[in-house]
Length: 198
Image (cartoon, rainbow, N blue to C red; front, side):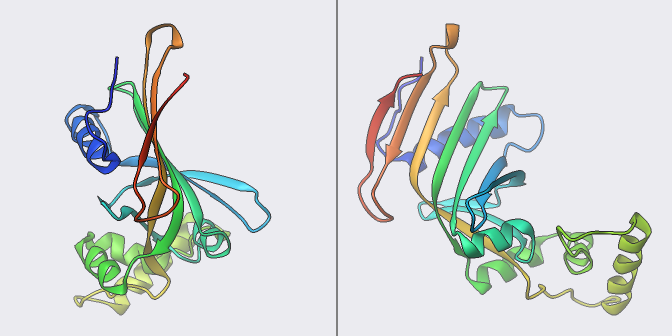
């Protein structure tokens, strides 16, 4: 049985995330990111959480990708973490805002050089004739920045989801799960906590 041990959902997330880092075999920071286009049609994919604090949850992408364009038109998203080894999940929804250029630059420079090259070479979400075309684009970018710093592309940045709902779900016998949801009307407001039926 699970009962929240704090009235602060960010602190509860920190505790569960630490558990996941200790128990998950691969990528405890993997999460589903769901967006919707301007017509309300949903789309979901797995990304990696790159930072989180009391302001929100941060991920990075090519802003010209499907998710980038969808967030430009409809700046709301949902995240879902599923930690199978712990039989837990966390669902998070809220508004999305761009990180600062300084945050994006700092994270981009922390990435492996090959990943920085790839951010320039990949026209993410656009049609690709074949793998050879992609590798030729990689070789072109490698030559362009041969031995030098690889700057952050102007179309590559991060988003911070600022939550208004965070639900903690713990698997229960006979599908009688423990579910608790923290909600607030807007960023900066006080959180309310409510148990939900499974």
